[in-house]
Image (tube, rainbow over all chains, first blue to last red; front, side, top):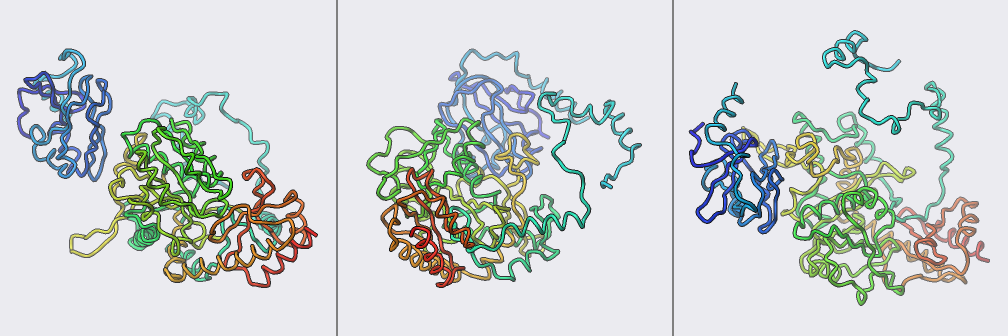
Length: 131
Length: 448
């Protein structure tokens, strides 16, 4: 597994979150999540404009062996979705932190980082899972 | 002696492993008021000899009447080969297998079934079947809510020709999941939907229509499908598969075709059998396949490049996705589907068309004869397939009783749903001219 990007925040459920310059955040799933699911065959995306709660179900990623919910790491509304995943869901496997992004959100409040994990904390979680 | 593979010792060890005192403890979370701890009304066990006798006696009570009842289940000739093949050891199981080791023959049979049903309904994909036509409507409505995500009303509008039993069942299954079912207005002359009274701006998630309708008429499904799409709704088409070799396939209704088709598969090789088991079919457009409930068999290529069959798109089923599965449909009517597949293979498209044509001719002979009797006339104008609603000038029940005394089931009493003294009659290809003439004569006498 490659090293975790240091500029992202993470969740227990293996989502990542990047703060963008305009105040929005980009969300995807981590390489660990993508690898565990296997080759993705389908991504069900939310609708732009939809409001989601922190921890709420936001998207579904499906591989040949499992379909898993992607949870919103923060409360907010969906500002954009990665439409390219409709035809090419394997982008998530190939580039989970780049082209494989899933949604862009506008946070409803300020970003409460205490609910999220730093790269070090998430790495520790992955290490524990390995044991 | 019941077959219980583990010993008392095994049970004790298993309970100890999970820290439970008794088997009874395992059911603790079911509230006491919901539990039935007696089975007084269940009789004592019977011997094989006694149960055989009981079943023979019960079966004899059915008799072998001349049946002119349709109303959702239809008596068709089933070639002997159908059940002779379906009950072979290789096929004889009620379940579609879950496991990857399912035999290629079983999987191919389901695959062939799916192919034939998609051809009949004119849509892209079929699942491996559902329980029956009525629960099929509930599944189609729930699927429409999942797939037509833009619409949040949960409102399902039903054309007046939808089988009323299907509405009851769909309401029972889906009514507690935020869906509401409402009837569209009926045109009293045609029995079909009243196009000049269609509600505007209700924002339905789906519009359901049936062809032929429950009272036997032919709905303008092209126009109704287009109206559904113009309202932003899915179009759900219920069709009797036996009619589809002659009538337009749901996938061709209107400009775009319906989004989901479903219905009762019983006419395809399954006996009436006092109401079941039957099976439901469901097909849809390709883009909705991931919201379709139930199992799907796909064709693939193995490592050596040979064609093979495999269960596919299983990730959304309950054995993997648990409570978040697209549906809690966990199996289907595998044996009925096997029979239907054999039936369709033996008849072919032309055979199914012949059955439909002959049924239409027989029904015409019956209806013409009945309408020549004083006090009987067509309830609705317009064309029909193999079933017709008739208006009577008197209560229908005593007339049906008089016919029953002559071993004739004269039709389905439509009085409650039609709101007037009315009867629904059907003569399939199984009836001879002599049968039909005997039926007409019996009505004439009873009405005399």
